[in-house]
Image (cartoon, rainbow, N blue to C red; front, side, top):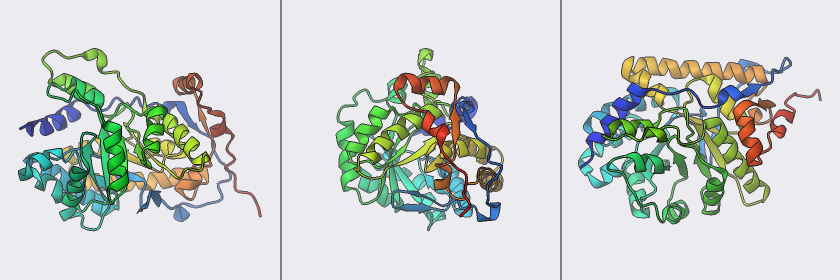
Length: 362
């Protein structure tokens, strides 16, 4: 039984922290000195598929599966309830294999009975297990996390990844709630997003590098660490642009709609606004929130989230964007390493800078 690993991950995540190198320093806002709006008129409402959320911030998947993690999930769920945030739990496979730890997940729904809650399983899950995970939480959606490199570094991790896409497709097509495919900190390439779109997935959490580093965490647990793998993956800004490129092609082909959640080291309204302006529908935050709730408590976390909401509204007002969708029309400049990556990958960045975000007189 591998339950102690859950708290190991929490301890290492807090000890190692976040690198902060998510690539957002390459993303520059273009000031709008004629915004024609006010902070009071800003709406943070957004959509992920059929789910309508009052905030674009999601308390992203962190933990569960051990008695000690129930307290963490309870505190996070209280904060989600008091601030109107959607929340995801960590992988529920532990509870499916060991029902005695179900409460470490179910506490989220008990505390936050009417909020949006996402279940979570890995790509090894079957449709039956996905249904059990959703039922366990009365979940509104299910995250399926992808963590190949973490598993390969993990001493007791999986080594067989055959059939991943087929299993995900089966769950996406037959599960009764929306499915979000999520990376855990290594990012998604456009080819993977395109394949998942064809498989019926419509929502993606890109989980780029720059936040909690699960390669580094698993190496800290190894007797013979493979330190050279700690830099595996692509930064959050890059994976956002990769994923948005695939989604734009999908939309333009008339095949349907798709939604991107930006995550990976997002710690502030400044970084969240950059991800949203690039084209994300929502952003996931985890490590920064975990640190606050564990070191300062629930009240401090609630205050942090409320401040982030207010700061995001200030930024949106400065850009003249009354909604999240308006942000997608605001010009933004991509430079540095991120621009170079896009150039060699054939992802055009000029359209982002050429957006016309000024409100015209009618």
